[in-house]
Every structure is written in C-alpha cells, then in structure tokens.
Image (cartoon, rainbow, N blue to C red; front, side):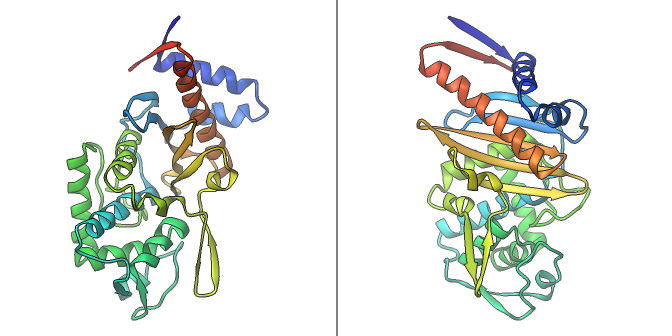
Length: 288
C-alpha cells in the first residue's frame, strides 16, 4: 500500500487525532490561529521533511539562538583554538545581561566547559556573551561569524546580532533553518551534542535543571533548546530517538510552555508513526 501525505493532509490528520485527546483545544488553536506559529518535523538522518507549517517564514529565535552560539564554540574546540578548561573572565558587558543568567560579576572567572553547560542548561544570557567574547574577541564579531556560518550551512532566513537571543527586531530565523542547524550539530560535532542533553548541572553549590521539560519525561527525548521572549512566544527545538530513528521537531511561537511541549510531543509522535509505517513495509511519500 502506498500513502501520499501532503503538508495539508498530514496537518489535517494530526488535528483530527488531536481532537480526540483531552488537550485538543490549545494544540489545535496553537497551529491554526497564531500568527507567530511555525513548525517543522525532520528525519535527522536524511533531512526529509515529515511535516512543515510556515517553515520558511521569519520568526524570532529567542534563546534557541544559543544553539548557534554553541555550534561556533564546538567548532573552535574541534579546531583546537580553545580548550574546555580555558578560563573566561566575565566582562562588564557580559555581567550586565538580563536574566536568565548565571549571575557572575564582572571580573569573576569560569571555565569554557562550565560556561557552555550554563548556556545549554540554564540558558544563561551572560554566559553566552562570555563565550562569544572569549572566542570571537567581541560579541559583535562573534555574531557576525554566526551569521556567516548560518549561510554556509544553508540557513537562508537567519541573521544574528547577539549571542543569547535577547529581543532585537533584526535577529531572525525560520523553523527550517533551525532544523538545518540541529542536524549540522549532530553531523559535525556529535561529541559535543551531549551538552544539549544534560538534565541538570551543578555549579558553586547550586543545582540547575534543564529548561527543556521534555528531557525529564523520557520517551526518547535527548536534547536541544528552549526559547522565549514576548515577541517570539514559546519556542522549542527538540530531538528524540526511538527504535533507532532520530527525529528533530521545531516549534516556534507557542502560547505557553505547556501547550508548546504538548504540541512538540504530538508532532514528534506523528513523525515516528510515519517512520514506523515505513519500517513495517508501507510506502509513504511525503510531498512538499
């Protein structure tokens, strides 16, 4: 049997399925009448798009920006330009960043490894800037390099002007671009992907829990990044592995943390249903 799933058909099937669940109302509303909404579901191995809605429309990335901040750090590590035990001295500019943050004062120090963990787990705005300054010499220079890297990776809708995703009308991306970036990290620096999967992190006597709540619920979720500003809504880049298959799901513009997580989970489940059907011999072609 051959099934052809087009964008509209897949989204309709998803909405019908969700309508049979207790959480249907916020999920369906999120995808149908939210001007900030965008989403994409991608097979991580092949890059095949299993679902897309407004995937090329420009959106505010918020703290998902930090995925590229860390990609650039991973590149510097792999090339030997920096080491995990490098000592970063916090500048007044980094210390002045608003929350969420680690809260180190200007002049205090932290290792690059801990700064990366703070960025991935705590979503620390100050540490993202500290990383940018340490590797790039300045945040402005680093973010220019981030934009160049985005173009190199094929991210056509993305521009960075800061390293942490704090509000700036010039800082834009798309769901498709973020899926490209997620795949690039897994492909180029698999040895460092673990930073995005840390459930928690201890520093200076405090325990920090990862802002990505899906990590704490099992079901194959193993990493990536949250984001939120008033302009962006609730964003999430998520990755999960089930039965040896990895799927990446990006949702931008969610109305709340809870509804965003539910929507990501529903999209992820649908993606894995397609993969399972194929594994069972059903030929499914996803038309874009």
